[in-house]
Image (cartoon, rainbow, N blue to C red; front, side, top):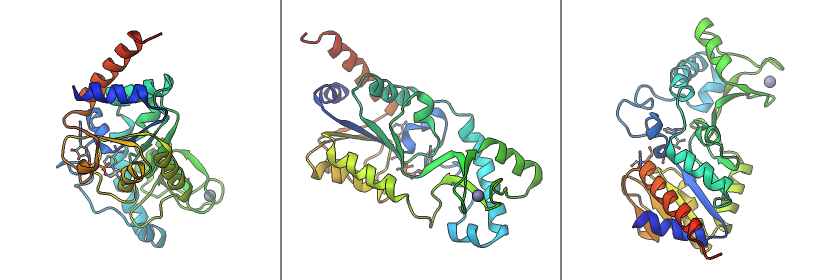
Length: 254
Ligand code: NAD
Ligand code: ZN
C-alpha cells in the first residue's frame, strides 16, 4: 500500500532525491549509530583539534579507524542500495545525499552521490589535500603502529571523513541544499534525522514545495511534516516500491 504510493509519486516526479542515513547500511551488517555493540560504542571518538594537535591522538584515531575499517571494507551493498542505483540508471532518481561514510551507494552503482560526512574508503592529507585509497594505509598502521604521513608533503593523513569538531565541506553542503530546494520528491530513509545540518534538508525540500516521504524503522522528529511515512525495514520497503514502479512501467499508457 504505502510503497505503492511512493512508486506512483516517483513515476510522476520530475526530480526525486534520496537522502540516506546509517539505517540503509544495517542490512549490509554495518551497525547504525544507536545499535548496542556498534563501532560507536567502543571508544570516545577523537576530536579533530586533538588529531591536529598531538601524535598521541593520531595514534588513538588510527587505532579506532583501523578497527572500523574491516567492518566497512568487507560490507556489500544490500537491496536498498541496489534499488536506488537502478532508479538512477532508469532516470527515476536524480541523486543520493548520504550521511554514510561506507561508500556502499557507489559500490551498488550510484554515480550522483553527495557524501555529507565524507568517505572512509579514502584517506586525505590535511596539508595538501592529496588523496588515496585507505586500505594500504590501514594495513601500514596495523603493521607499524605509526600514524601514516603524506607521500607528497609528509603532512598527516586522515580518513576523508568529517571528524567531530571538523567543518563540513561548504561546496557539498551547498549542492545538498540546491538539490533539496529544487526536487519535487524528497525521500529520507534510514536516518533518525537528528544530526544537523543534514537533518535540515527535509525541511528545505518541504519549504520549496517538494513532497516528503520518510522511510524509517523508528519515528523521527519530521514525521509530522511528511506526506507519507513508511515504517519498517528499508530493504523490504524499497524492494516493494521498486516492484510497483517496474509494474507501472510495464502497464504504462504508451
Ligand atoms: P542513526 O543511527 O542516528 O539513525 C539510523 C536510523 O535508521 C534509526 O532511526 C533506525 O530506526 C533506522 N534503521 C536502522 N536500520 C533500519 C532498517 N533496516 N530499516 C529501516 N530503518 C532502519 O543514523 P544517522 O541519522 O545516519 O546518523 C548517524 C551518523 O553516524 C551519521 O551522520 C553517519 O555519518 C554516521 N554513521 C555512518 C554509518 C555508515 O556509514 N554506514 C554507520 C553509523 C553511523
Ligand atoms: Zn600532503
